[in-house]
Length: 268
Picture 1: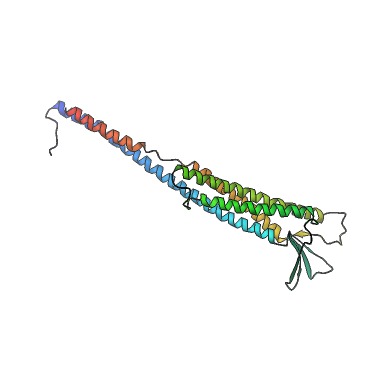
Picture 2 (picture 1 turned 60 degrees about the vertical axis):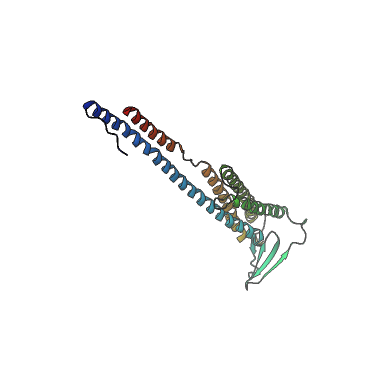
């Protein structure tokens, strides 16, 4: 199959140079959309990896915070007290029982006799801690299917929107769980501070002080709030990810067809 060359003469050679010069910018411009498309795909993959990292970090912090909240609800050392008359023993006050700890490490606990006879702050703390644990567990179960590493909700735009909604819902429940955990812990600490600096109580009367459960509850509450914010931010980041526009490939085809059509028309 032979190659068609232009006829001899100044006019044909000038037309051939004009044709070559006119097709070179089109060929150069056809390479640019492919480069832009590859850069868009590369940026999208980077943002996907960032979103997955935020989700995994949020779920890890979520589990640690929920376990801290569970330990806070079960520990009997919300408030501790030691007396000068009996230095070998210390007392602990929890949501479900009171304990006596001796120097030898022996701990004896006794549950409360009556639910209706409990003080109001203990009833409130029980309700809020149980609600916090329930909301945190529900949030973890809802957010787990919404992770990008979990194959659920199908593929496509509808599946990605459903996964984002699950992740955002789990994050909101995590924030609610953390706030519900912080309220009773902070309230109990406030009561301990008020009674400790009460001038009407004689100095010889022992006072309640902060126990280990309060610090564990503060840690669990803040971790749950941070985990919820991480999950919600990962959902917003995935929604803001740019999608590559495939029109560049169609523009390349149209430019090549236009160049071939112009060649044909010039030779005809």
